Image 1: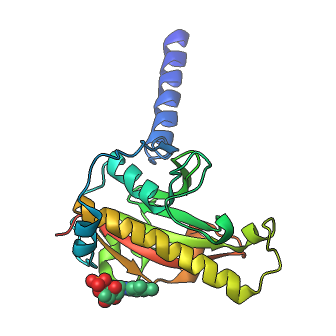
Image 2 (image 1 turned 180 degrees about the horizontal axis):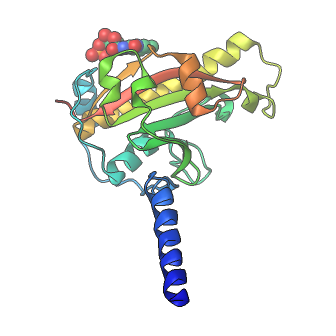
Length: 222
Ligand SMILES: Cc1cc2nc3c(=O)[nH]c(=O)nc-3n(C[C@H](O)[C@H](O)[C@H](O)COP(=O)(O)O)c2cc1C
């Protein structure tokens, strides 16, 4: 009888542990290893330019990992042996981080490892902007300047206006890379400056030296 009771107790404890970990979706919220891009695909650059446009109606179809992988690589992935990227950056100071808001949570794109590092589990898409489509589109990107990155650069004392211009231009270049990838891949996208920066900074757990420059919503057009 005593043996039966202790077996029951162990079984109950096991069920409790499993539901408290898996039930909250924590088990799935971990680093996502991205796939290398397929380079032999896509429409011509001229066709991509012809098709680029802003889209504001999205279906709720999620992006498959290979598509997400290529999109982030297009944004600012490593494209050369010397570690440089698909997008330019003033003096190659990589001071723009790409936060990736998916249905299951927020991640940070690590371009060198080509993977997504978990930041915050949960569906925060509603907070990605002021327009209703942000809550249901599968992906919102947030381009975040990290002014601390200049401290260890060759220009730590550059004027603030110069630093701001450099990161804004770098973010714009990345967003345009994404827009052209979207045009080629049949995805819709819109870059946005409309968002509650304070609310988003809390969700992304940003430091004071970090500032959200731009957002971009992506998904399949309705
Ligand atoms: C810096 C910037 C901020 C923008 N912010 C928004 C925005 O908050 N919401 C939105 O729907 N579109 C936004 N747009 C998209 C523009 O409205 C759009 O590019 C413009 O109307 C031209 O349309 P097109 O992109 O289809 O050529 C923004 C574009 C830029 C470059």
